[in-house]
Image: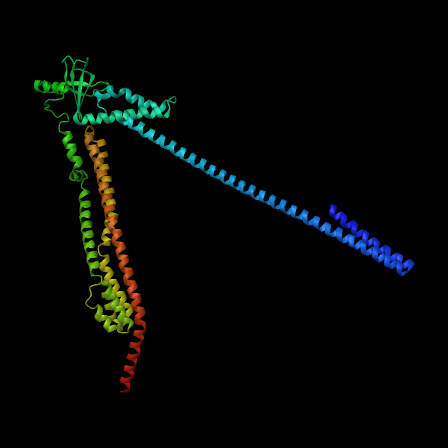
Amino acid sequence: MKTKKTFNTTFLAVAGLVIGMTCAHAQTGGAASVESMASAMVQKVTTSSKELAALREVIATEKIGLAKRLSQIETAISEARSEYDKIIRSNDARTLDISKAKGVAKQRQDEVAYVSSLMDEYARAFEGRLHVSETERYKEAIELALLAPLNKDLAPADKFNRQIALIQQSVVRLEGLIGGVRFDGTAINAQGNIDQGRFALIGPVALFAAKNGSSVGLALPKSGSSKPLIHSFADPIQTAGIASIVATGKGMLSLDPTLGGALKALIAKGSLWGFFKKGGPIMWPLLALAILALTVIIERIIFLNIEALRRSSKTVRAIMHALEKGLPDDAIKAGEKSKDFVARCLVYALQHRKKSLTEALMRASAREMVRFTRGISFLDTVVTMAPLLGLLGTVTGMISAFGMLGGSELSAPTAITGGIAEALIATTFGLGIAVTALIPLNYLHAKCERARHEMEDAVNHLELLMKPISETEANQDSDEESNEKMT
């Protein structure tokens, strides 16, 4: 502002001097006066020029300083903006990390809840699998494991430790049952008194011998009691054998407490024929469908393998090469003896090209596709019919089961469960046949579509190459007819 004010003052002084000189010249009109005024004017101009140059230097100096200051401010602003962007990115990254951490924490909480639920379910199932003689032995561990999830004062680690302790005891119990385990406990004798003694648990069989020798026998569940009932034997040899096993872990046990039921259950569980017989009369149509479907699948797989071995892309290329040269007869000779289905289709069409090339191609393609699709419709029928037959077996089995409810055989629960088993087995076999046949059915469909695409590609190529050949042959036939007419 100061520089600008000085410049304006100088300009006004010069302007005033010029005006004064003009006025003075007008009044005096003398030459001397003009020269003195000119000299004064030159001095004023020189002085003003110097002041102007000084002002320019001041302006240049201040401009450089201002430019440097502006550059420094811009640099500071850029650095501040960069720091701000860095802070924003860091904040976004932290927000994302916090979100991920919350997701992981939620997932871990869900996993903990799921595992806790599984362990609680395991504890309840374990309690139901125990022999009545083991109830007292594992009672405390089961109660701790079942009550742990309900105790809000316990830390999660303590809850898991109590549940895991039960699992560890169950593993130890399983290892002991493999070779047999002995432990102390109490049981009710035949007189209804409680005896202190020792148990020997060997698989599903629990033996007991009182410490005073008053009761020896099998430990069996008793309705309404948490303690087992001792079933004694009149045979002294069996009694001595049980006492020896309980006392030393060695001895002879000449009895089957399941009355042969364990062996029958094992045979029925591992026998497919046993399941088949329990499925009812509907199993025979299902068996017929399964055999026929298996036969068709094997025949189709053999057919596809044979066709794959007969494929000859070299022959097909030879046919196309001959047609590119305009020699259909050579193309017929190239593929006449080939067993490749594509080559046979092309050769048949070329042999009947003078009648109708398009119809010959369609007939040859259809004839080859009939060979590929043979049996697929039957497999499709099997996939549809097998579940329906299984459903029919379900209905008949349920009718058989619920038909017992109004008759005199209500006291025989095996008759009811047998009907339900028949229903479930028939459904299982029907669905199994359908699922098993569905995979090869889709495989055969895919192979047929691939063969269809290969033939369509070859047919289109043949028609494209035969178009100029057909026109040439048509012109030749027309010329021959004309010559014959002229003759």
